[in-house]
Image 1 (tube, rainbow, N blue to C red):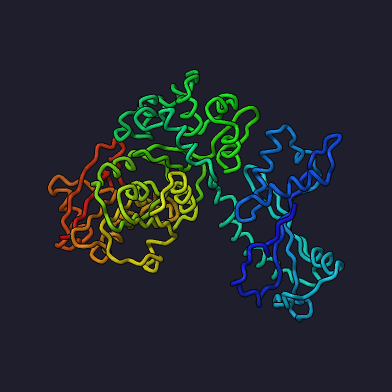
Image 2: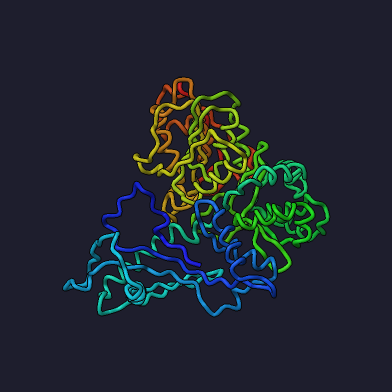
Length: 495
């Protein structure tokens, strides 16, 4: 199967500087039973591929389909997946061979030309569960080594953006509502779930506590016969569950849809969810697993603070809302249920995809989810005044992680994002507007939390401050200088 990069171009793209395109090749063996006509098989496959969204060819669903039918011919195929670069330039005439010249996109190529350019530059990819490798073959008479090295580095940088680090759930097409309905009908809700896990109320739980770990271990060691237990194990704790138990809850077409949407993976006679699904305020929200080993662009699970922040926001028909550091989008999506328009902002490309998926999953239409860096003033949001601003930014003190590169590191003091937000509050909040921020604050016996917050961030006197020290059991953290920091939710009100 071949899919080339030219298919991505539309009429409004300028192709005058085009020097070539990539083609992805996936070997696919199609079993033909006795009596079948090969032509009919190919035609059937063609029709299925045409119906894929955006004319896309997603290799994983096809592979899952073969595995499901017991016909995983990929493992028996000697051909390997490859990425070819169709080079149309004439840089071999350059003295230094360090430039790729633009060519006439409409140039007619003979079959020999096609074969020649694939031999000149060929990229072959190898991937397993833990690693990705790239083999580059090139004609040294036409390309200098320095050019190939620069080319390969640029290619790998793009793969980091669009490859495995962006492993995200894909839209469920027409099955999203069915999936959510079945979860809710099975009482997949916060109270029921966390009571089963002996963690209710969840806002008092410290998920890093040994008691919580012991409680989860005890739960996983119990037999799972109840449908809710099956769903908790599969979609919250992301453990392997027997396929037959999943099929007892979901119809076969929905299970296939969850596989094609990159959510469920086949594990022999079991299924495993790549992502955790949480219920909050009657919404179903997908995140990375709670105990995931992934450290690249991880999308934050719903810790107790997520629930507390939702509980803190007064329900009102807000006109314009802004959710900063949106992550999975949970806070912004919740406020969209009682507001007119919501803008969600994050600099993590995976978070953007998760938030879009969660909006799709919950059929939310009044939420704009955009990529932007809060650390950069040119972050892509037209900062007119908002009625409501919410933020659950990275706030843990960290000397080892660059600010903004993960969901928890907030600089040496942990206050970098809070500082940026409070500095801009006069510009972004309407009169009578409110802002709710999750953060840490050093505890002082002499001063109130409100006084400490105002002095720390030099908040304008026109902004009223209310700081709530929460019940979250994980709220007290010892910083490196020996101070105790307390988890807080601060409300800023512009008079």
